Image (cartoon, rainbow over all chains, first blue to last red):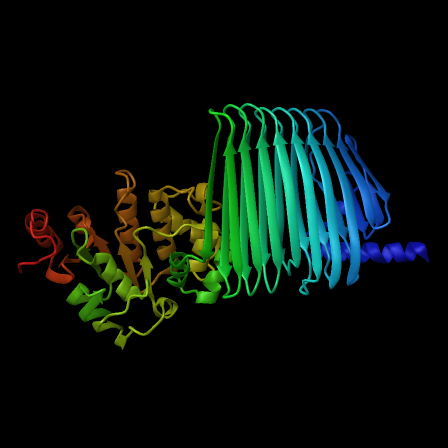
Length: 318
Length: 238
């Protein structure tokens, strides 16, 4: 009985995972590390050489740990799948990531809540990327069309010397619901951090994105890039903060928020602080309606106005 | 094919296009030559219907129909298109997708052919975005390639030669000739009389008026002699 319930949940989650672009075969391949979690149940976990992936069920979620051993170059991305299939629920994911010195890994994560009416999904991550290590993390959310979900991803990231951290979070299919995104990165010398968030807000979605990078080491570099498109009555506030605290640190905050609806509201707060005379941090933000010239360029090729807007929106969120 | 008939545009009380009459014939390249500020781009916008420009007088007739009330899309669907002097940059829109939508779902071979016609190596450009990472010259050549993909009946090219390096200019001009050979009539707008050799006829604009029309060599020389040295900017004595 228990096995059949787990099997059903697994199939349901993997079906949804595949629908939103996930690779089902990757979850079944024992040469690819993966983790599938439904509510607070770990439905499958696959470790491979060089990758330690452990999880422990909690009352409302799981505590998971991912460790990439020193100098291991993981050739195929690790796949993570978190989700809740019922309309209601609470999922709290605690995630500890350690990428040891010289290791390299890519992670593809999907967070799936296709029927969400009243769901809360929290993620608290602590990510430690050691010297000369590389961690590339791509997370895609799918929330269904009801928007009855609150998503609260938080992460504290520490980069060692010459470490590379690339994070792309994408929430462009279905309704967002409420999003409270909060990431903070502390960077050592000559490390590189690139944080990209792409969100498409609709209906009465409420979006808050806060990203902070502390460039603490000589020559550390960072890019905070945010792309938000809002329609209907969706609202968004984007706070991009970069602190240049060391010589030759270079940071850039780049925010574009497009509004395509009379009731939508966009706000951007770039904060750039430099406390070392040899550091440099820049920012650019563009907020407002979709550029008329872009729309007319596509209309001059025969697209209707709505089609042109759609092409521009899909481009910016690609 | 297209007639601008006593066209007028007044903006904020200022006459930008002043009783302008101009005709584009089937299958020709019509050069429109004028110094800066003479109304060349405004004329292009009026024909295409962009930038919220609507004639305050006169008519724009395309294939026998007054198109003044048509949207940009409607004009494009009738076979008119415009390559902007400063083409828009669109983040996330790849060259291959831009040409595909311009060419009404062109296949990859046709897309590659259009890039080659403007001297661009497809493998280097197909997957690039038409965004700020392209140089001005590259973006202009891609704009021309998208017009080649679209194969409009009438292509308005607004200063395709401006800001182009000396090596790229022949590639652009080859593209314009190729566009004409594949069946498009072309309005080639420029302030550089040296590129008028590829035109069949040339009209000279001054202060929003056509002040002279004729064969390229003679009209270009007239432009050089009269407009280049003209001291009464935008007040035609003719």
